Each structure stands twice: as structure tokens, then as C-alpha cells.
Amino acid sequence: MYMRSFARLFSAMAGPRPVVFSGPSGAGKSTLLKKLMKEYDSVFGFSVSHTTRKPRPGEENGKDYHYVTREAMQAAIERGDFIESAEFSGNIYGTSKAAVQDVRDKNLICILDIDIQGVKNIKRTDLHPFYIFIQPPSMAVLEKRLRDRKTESEESLQKRLKAAQVEMELGKEPGVFDVLIINENLEDAYGQLKEALLGEINKVKKVNVSS
Ligand code: ADP
Ligand code: 5GP
Image 1: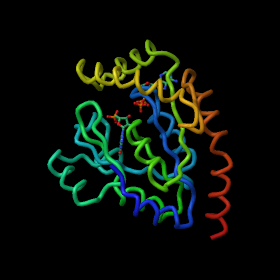
Image 2: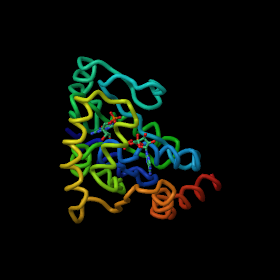
Image 3: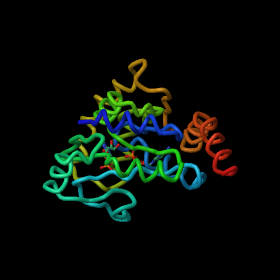
Image 4: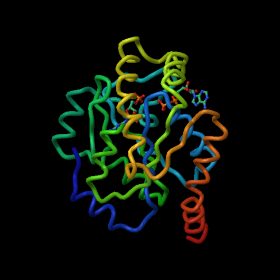
């Protein structure tokens, strides 16, 4: 689901290019983007998605996600409040127009953490973000990380692993992502991420210092 008219308006506005993070659940997207936002808090802002899943221990409503009921989410989608939304592992997730606009209003680089369906839908809009794919070193490592995270039921874990097989294939397809990072060693992966974004980081730093 997407709203072309909003995206056209959005892309016409001056401001830094958003960055989309995607990749299998457990690949390390949150770990990497939290590290990035901590080091560059005056450069990046997170697009806080809505979800119908329950918060995990340590997650905060309004910071990690807006946690909503399925009914509220469906009503908001029907109202046209979302740029994109998708069903993933038994729950609905979506990027609201307001979530992206809030970051844009602060002249920060907007970070979106979305699944592969979200990537496909955002590609049909005029948002024109950078697309970064975070890949685990192997399916076995992915499973271990997900199990060690201790956030998923066995059912949810199996759904995520199944989705991961499809996502890994799309990550390899040429032209879908601008940058592919294999998150084996965290510091190495983070270094690659910073290198990929350095040009944009410096642009935003310059604008925000001089304004
Ligand atoms: P995602 O946001 O993609 O679902 P997370 O960032 O939650 O993934 O990472 C999944 C788990 O793997 C977390 O427990 C995290 O601490 C761990 N992790 C992330 N990157 C690495 C890494 N390079 N080496 C080992 N463990 C990692
Ligand atoms: P989790 O439940 O682990 O936080 O997220 C599960 C999946 O949903 C991840 O692949 C994550 O990128 C994706 N996701 C989070 N927010 C959104 C969103 O707003 N839209 C879409 N399409 N996917 C999202």
C-alpha cells in the first residue's frame, strides 16, 4: 500500500534523502541503526512505525514503535495515514506520513527500518531513499541470533526464518539495494555503514551548522 501523491509532494520538498534499512529479522538492523543514531544524533532521525505486535521488554511506545490494535491500524490505513504498510509474521507494520514528516521537519536524514514488502512499495513512490540491505553471514547465524535475542516464540521465530529465505534472495538481486552489508563482525559492518553514508552525513552537518 502506498500514496503516490504524498510521496510526490514529499520528494519535491528540499531536504536530505531518507535511508531505508531492510534485511531479515535478526540480521542486526536495529543494532546498527541505533549505533548510528547515537553517534550522529544531530544528523539522523528515526521514522517511528506503527505495529500491531506487542512491545518487547525495553521497547518504548512512541520511540521504537507506536503500538496499536489491529482495528486502529486498519482504520488509520483506510483513512490514508500511511505511506506504506505490510503484514509481517502475523502482525501489521506501517510507516505513517507523520512519522516521516516529523523527521523531515527537523532537517534530519530520515531512517526507515522496513521489511521487503515495504521496500517494494516505497519503490513505487517518489521518496527516492538510499536502500541498504543488512545481511546475516548465514541462515544458521541468523537463527542463533534470533534465538539468543529471546524475544520470539517458536512460532514467530519460524515465521521470521521462512521470511528470511525470501528476503535473502531479494537482497542479492541487482538493482534493488544500493548497498549490501554483511553483518558478521559488528564493528566492521558499522564501519561499512558509516562509509556508505559519509557523504550524506557531511552534507547535513554543513547545512545544520550554517543555519
Ligand atoms: P534486527 O533489528 O535486524 O531484527 P537486531 O539488531 O535485533 O536485528 O539483532 C539481532 C540480535 O543479534 C540482537 O540480539 C543483537 O544484539 C545481535 N547482533 C547484532 N549484530 C551482531 C553481530 N555482528 N554479532 C553478533 N550478534 C549481533
Ligand atoms: P520487528 O517485529 O522485529 O521489530 O520487525 C519485523 C519486521 O518488520 C522487520 O523486518 C522490520 O524491518 C519490519 N518493519 C518495521 N516497521 C515497518 C514498517 O513500518 N513497514 C514495513 N513494511 N515493515 C516494517
